[in-house]
Amino acid sequence: MEVTQILHMNNGEGETSYAKNSTLQRKTLSMVKPIIMEAVLELMMSSNIMGIESMGIADLGCSSGPNTLLSSRRSWMSYAELISRRQSQSSECI
Image (cartoon, rainbow, N blue to C red; front, side, top):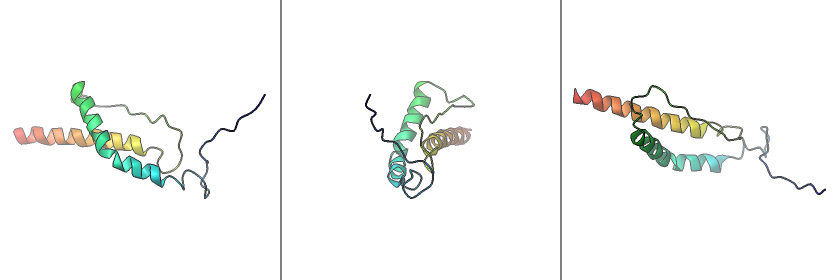
């Protein structure tokens, strides 16, 4: 049986690790922040969940290093920002 080599991220914190070489992924996550915010807003509006007290977000990736939870955190921050905006709009209407 022939064994094939599988490409994967280098773990750890060495010079060739994902943790040290993930700047491109971080920049990409920064570029898509408005898209994430729009998607969260659409989700909230389409399913009428503005009144809920919590929202679950999962990171199903396998990365390590500084980007591990960045996309989940950005999704959560988008949700929190939208809730904050909604609360301030409600206060202005009173």
